[in-house]
Image 1 (cartoon, rainbow, N blue to C red):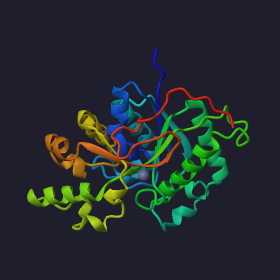
Image 2: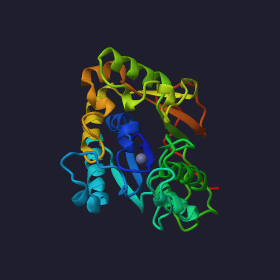
Image 3: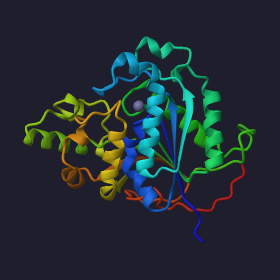
Length: 292
Ligand SMILES: [Zn+2]
């Protein structure tokens, strides 16, 4: 019997997993790769976009609502495990909420890394995916997610670190989620052609805060078979994502034709790789004994 392959995604809020890598998660499910998603915060400070969710009655329950939305989205994507680290949302960069006592931004990093190390040693992922150093677009919770994931991936295989957190496990490849500039340029051109507003309300895609230069992309995954499920997963995040969300505002066939890939940057590899690649598990060996 073939050894099981496993992928772990670490995200700041419910919805980030579907937006940045919903297609990859569904594609892994189709291949029999076991997946787990970790959500670091409760997301309770996010803007509520749904018309049928009034602020006064929704806000007090938003953390709970977003947990349910994440579980529903992950069920659609075939994610095997959903876990929450339980930290508080920090709100957008520069907001006074960054300083709240329960804000993920103010967390004891060492303690948070320990929680993630325990998850890595228990789930034993071969591949881990998270954000780049600005957390994709500068949200403090995304930056903190980046920090703790990098540290946890490196600490997880060292027996001397977090010694009570389980048997050491070495992750073979670590990736950052990415939206290539060419992808956003194509979206802007198609929107213009169709007489629709520019995606995210920004005319020049280079001005968007979450653009990755194409030359940094190492890995492009074909998600065409998973586009329908990715769209359904986005819809499941009802409090956060409305029908005008760029990927939902266009017909599914157009999405499949023009946006049938997801892009990633390989930043750590413990196995030989040939880049660019189309499979995050390229070069990965299912069996690995580690003890450092
Ligand atoms: Zn987020």
